[in-house]
Image (tube, rainbow, N blue to C red; front, side, top):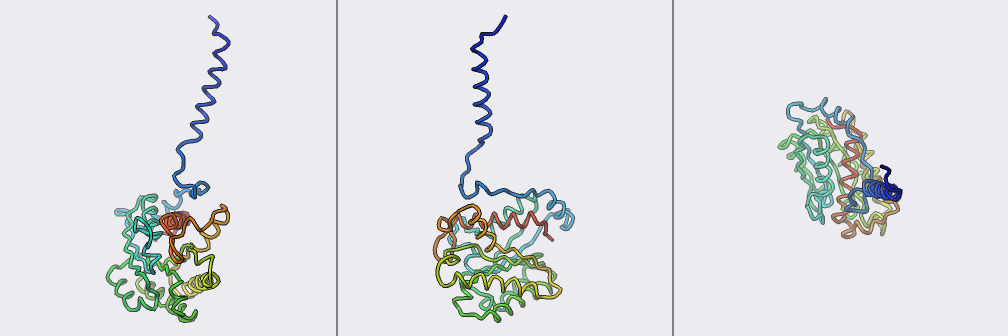
Length: 256
């Protein structure tokens, strides 16, 4: 028996509607991440499993920095560093023991001898150095003194066989507005140069400041939805910074 001719347009319409719904999927929860593609972690996972304890897959990470590194004004209190470490651990299926020793208002100078004690007590495999730079500028710490302090921190970590990750800070209002906008990238460059100048140290640089600025520019996004105040990002800002940092770590496959 032949089917009525009207049924075929109905079937075609049904298939088209189904394909359209399937292609759309779940709506994104945050428009900032619409164009944010993640690198495949497969090659990095092989690297990690080869270089870590296969029985535990554990990585101990210690961080030092100021209030931005602490996670000020992030509703979760994790901040971009804590968020990044969580994403790295979840993606690569390793346990990241993250100890954030950052302190609001601190600079390398104010941290002083406490840093050496942290290294002795924690015995990390990786030390993240992520100063906000704005406190250093406000304290009128010279570039030469700042670089000397960074060299000291890197050298002391290297002496204990730690790998050092230099992470420049996320963007804030001060990155774009005011007198600090011109000096912040200079101090970020000084930090990178000083760390790389330490002979024998294993240093990996994540220029989050530059990467985040480039990301916002490429996606025609403003920094304003990410700001909490002049010196600190809000929850959204920490979230984006954490994702960018995690993806850089995973994509480069540099876990020790």
